[in-house]
Image (tube, rainbow over all chains, first blue to last red; front, side, top):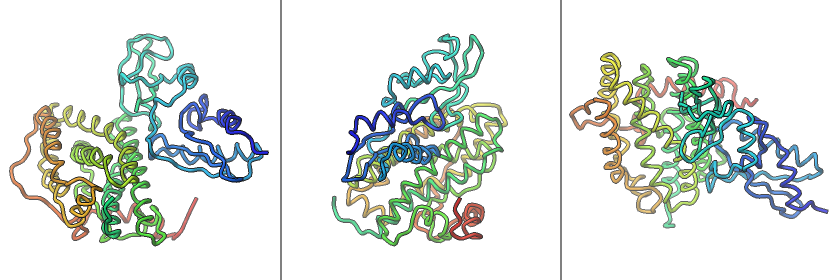
Length: 152
Length: 255
């Protein structure tokens, strides 16, 4: 019997993002659709940034996780439209990012507060960071630098 | 969608993809060499976005061509005369200021072009543009800020930025001069009339350069021949020897 889509979504929610392992690929909002096409499970995945090297690793991790659950035929479909947006990050994902030390994205274009000491006195160091999805900021109270998940 | 000559569509897609590929490679040459760590990371991230966009443009170009060539084949196995990028993006990096001036001039055109392409009659092109435009919005914010910071900086940084503008401004025109391929794309609703992008570009670039206390050089001369493939500058061949050497030396190598 083929597992239901709901169950598959739960399995995928256990697949961590390779760069930010505290959130899942589902939290990140990059799994767009899960659908059976005969005996083949088609998973629609959208890239975060077009050049993000994690994208191919994520596809491989998804395939591996589904094989481990006994699904023999998996097809990953790359879907670029509509383009990924940080609006698709789950609330659970946002909370975990902050616990991990990465300020979650905000429409205002910058972090609400320092993920460590929670001060709202923060300043931008650079628009870009260690991965395409992050920028570098600094807390002017505790003086610690931190990553900010860019809002796009 | 109006029918369009597939050879011309292929040409158009190569222009988009070769612009991002060649500039992406140029910018990646800074990796490990930028003046400060944050700029090094920013340049590498910009290069990564551009290479990612290249995969979409050239991947689709290969599909349209229908000869089984992949994005990698098009990027790594064509020689200079088959490249369709504008001359601006193949110009050498020069100093950091020159690199950022080249980036800003391209980003400002790129942003206007991609915004227009999101309304393309070709769904795949509209989707690639919608994906890319978010990244390019970010690129131009940074390159514009840097041009202002350095232009309106010290007398030394101001001089270098003015020199960079004087050097690169004659390459701007090529991005707006339409030829038969551009006309065919515009008629089919696939791409905008290039001349229609000029007003937005001039307003954007003029504003940033004024704030940067820089002066746009006089003269209407425009270097041309890159996007038509008629005549690239000598710099492109040197770039390709670096970019393509592995696939040339070890054909088909994968890892």
